[in-house]
Image 1 (cartoon, protein in one colour):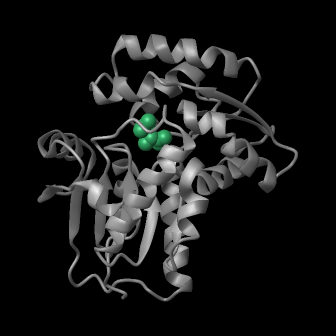
Image 2: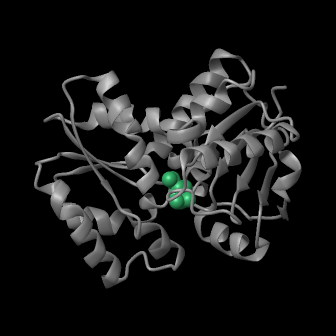
Length: 268
Ligand code: DGL
């Protein structure tokens, strides 16, 4: 069991930012990553749809004998985490609670901004979790749906991205926030652009770091750390292996070897 892999999934490539952090903090662990590239984006889909996709992915990951699952997608964490975690005995963690904890620690004035997909913002999950952690917090949310396609187009540092970020963020900045949660897997990839828009006085919180920390503490509690003698990272997608491999190569610190395409229908 200890040398079994960690299952990580996302709607596509964005969750690789979380996988990267897990590889960095837990280098002895093997990973099975699934990116649902055929059905991305999740951010504009309904709760029921996301639950049914997440359930299929969990079934697939279980066939790889994973010892824990990380829901690296914010939208799936918002809509499906509770449901799928209740359907298995292994630990399942999402990115929202770790991100909220980090934001609560970072804020000094108690005014926190959250930017994410439409689904994550509509679910109100960040706001609920933040207020459970600290009822005094004031939370200001904004959906930024254009950020995901801009990142996937490779326009991280384009002036268009800066302009769009400026337009999205001016509302939220008017509330005097001192902390901004990057509540979508793709947003850390335009971190520099976002920081330029909000200024150096606003702390940007990326849930990936805290998620890896939480995973570490679960592996420690359950005494299921891998021994690091044979570390293997396997990648699976539901569409276009080539596109995934190219994008993954720009994010991950390691060689992206085998990427296999999986037909998700068989996991109904
Ligand atoms: N992975 C999604 C998230 O973090 C963003 C991309 C999508 O909409 O599928 O919410």
